[in-house]
Image (cartoon, rainbow, N blue to C red; front, side, top):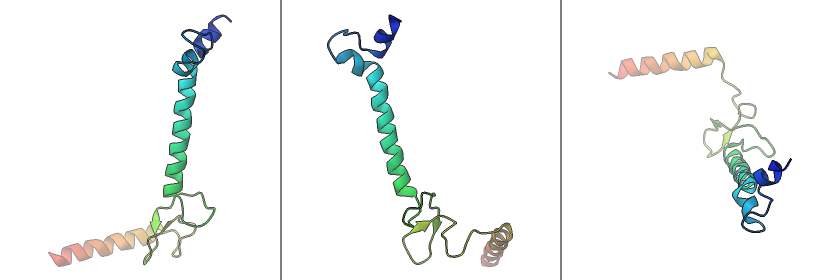
Length: 97
């Protein structure tokens, strides 16, 4: 077990805390930074409904808000709805040319 203090950086290599922060403590610092970044991204992209942690991908027409499909006023689009919208878009493209 004599390797454990050296790997974690607590065996006083060049000073009291130098070994820790340049070794094992540096990993902890990076993990904390990643956790803060993940929270920022989650807060920026989550549903605008209070206390909803789902990712908000669906824009609400007439507002600047994005909500999840669970809270969207039109509900989640079905396969038939997506196909109908695609066909309508194709008709518009061929009619405009």
